Length: 110
Ligand code: 2BA
Image 1 (cartoon, rainbow, N blue to C red):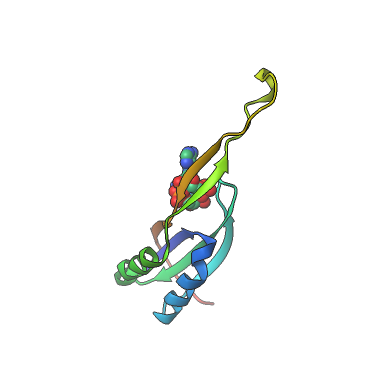
Image 2: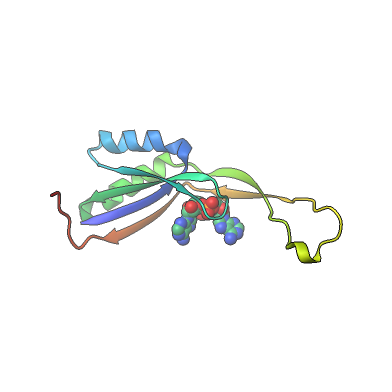
């Protein structure tokens, strides 16, 4: 058995969970926050048989879109600055999805 851990954008989650359910894949949604943007995203846990990993990855790839997000650079440390700090905006591409596929040693429903 395998565990897919997929970090996806909130805008894609309902379509993705619905499509997974339609294809008989169970998933668990966890609210998460990206370390770089400090913005909310969603982590899905999907436990499945090894042979089905590629099918699930295909579904994730089809639904999760790449988007551009604008973030503001952090101010330099206060010690060395003179005058007002003008924040710089940075554009980053987020997604489609960041996916980890791991082995599951044991799976039980107790
Ligand atoms: P965030 O950490 O908020 O990152 C959002 C996007 O910002 C990333 O998109 C990437 O394009 C960019 N980014 C991240 N760190 C950067 C840096 N040091 N310099 C410049 N740009 C940077 P994605 O790569 O699609 O990642 C989306 C989200 O997936 C991340 O949100 C994070 O929550 C998660 N993630 C990505 N890689 C991960 C990893 N190796 N381990 C755990 N979580 C990861």
